[in-house]
Image 1: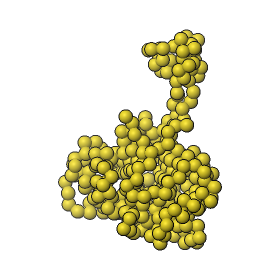
Image 2: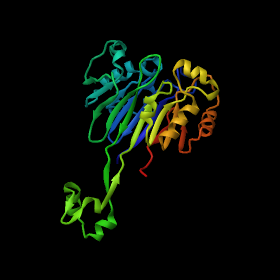
Image 3: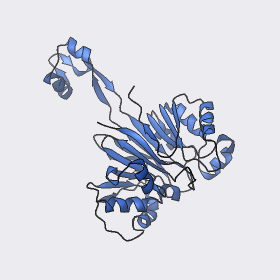
Image 4: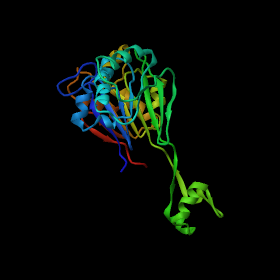
Length: 301
């Protein structure tokens, strides 16, 4: 059975707290696992969340601040210790190559797994598979930062009543799907477009074109909301978003489920992030993330 869900490993910005670990997020997408921004302590959070090294197929780092990358050393060594049987790709800003190298080889260990380095230095497609296309967009932060977007190809949904009306059944259903026509019946006559699902991961950034491009039409958007709206000046100065800004992006982009995360330790009431997001006019499903939470990708419309 295919599973599409976000496993939240950590939600703190800058420093961990008693209740929030450094960042870390695993997207389960059918048979693949994509790990985003493994901050310090991610390896232990994976254990607590029931995530194994074998579940990982890609690692995506938005930028090289410690709360988004210090866990790389432990995660990479664990991948090798557990002898993960498949290759793993790592995406990160090319400008931070020296940091990636230091983290990858922070201590001595035996390399047993093929880890392919695939750094990012421009907007565009990073990888295209049958299951999804992975894209990157540049963000606005004091150090170079990229957000990631996963798009499933559009498909077709076969309509049982129309198939029956045309007397199409059994092997002929597969035949018309493959060939697009069966006799005088076109595929369009017995099916409808099935829009591919979309996911985006947006971390440390000010408002910029990249934020909107990543969020556009997403079924699930994971986005930082480091500050509350009254501290918008701090957000701009330090290259971050407020809860209201993140929700406004989601509202304007037509996001179905918004996940707010990356919270400053200065705030003690997480419900205020939800209140400000709703005040900004976002009416879709909303989650103020907490550690070890699981958030399913919304079912298709």
